[in-house]
Image 1 (cartoon, rainbow, N blue to C red):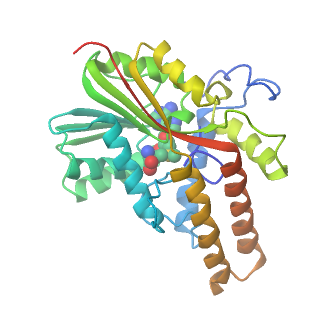
Image 2: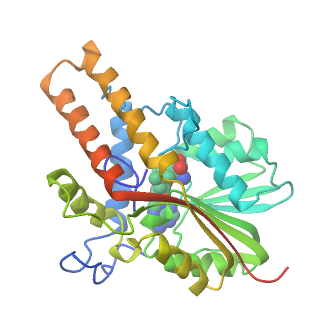
Image 3: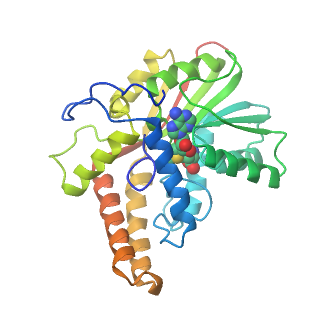
Length: 311
Ligand SMILES: C[S@@+](CC[C@H](N)C(=O)[O-])C[C@H]1O[C@@H](n2cnc3c(N)ncnc32)[C@H](O)[C@@H]1O
């Protein structure tokens, strides 16, 4: 996920320049921070610590919560499905998945949408190794090619993909705009780019509380300020990169907002769990919930699609 406890956010080199109104100094973002956060998450999920997100499968996203859904694993699959739909992944396609996490959505699409091949790129080596192991176990090596690499320098020929997708990952790219241009280049004419992303609200209210201010310090390390713009700007940026038929759909209610409702119930369950009676885990669970609620009040979430002109 993009943000506090998990997901938000070229190179470890130069910082990303002046931030949006209200932020001070150059952006502290580096890809090193992004990798460290995901490494930390791997350790947390294997050390007997409370499973704060309530995700058992390998997804790392807010999920898409249909009415009645109370299961984060199912919500993650549903978000992957919404993105597959937005991209129009269909039998015979060659798909590029950028920021693939543990590859769960690729296993899902290969089963349900039958593309000819998916190539994945991810900057977190531990995730790539784990996803490759799983690919072999599932006997999918001939159709799924997972590599370490960065979204802002795609090592592929011009016009070589039918679809490019980024499931809750492009906020981390330095910058998202460089990625949009790279996606445009590697798509064939008529090909589609589709993303899902958390964004700041169009009109943020007030300064936010202490939790939100601390979360913003963290956000700036893992999401370049240059990417931290609202929904109305997102569509303009896709058009600037050359895309047409741009669709930027607000799904905040079904994603971040519904995820916060789940988090309340999930954290209440964790706090009743006798394994987490001592101060430290209880404090971690309570702080996590405050972060989730603060973000839900300050962020939007979109599913987008855009087409490269031509056929
Ligand atoms: C929130 S996780 C989402 C993972 C997966 N798509 C999912 O929904 O489960 C963001 C992913 O983006 C990857 N990522 C971040 N910056 C990247 C970059 N510049 N290039 C490629 N992948 C990147 C991270 O390693 C992580 O796997």
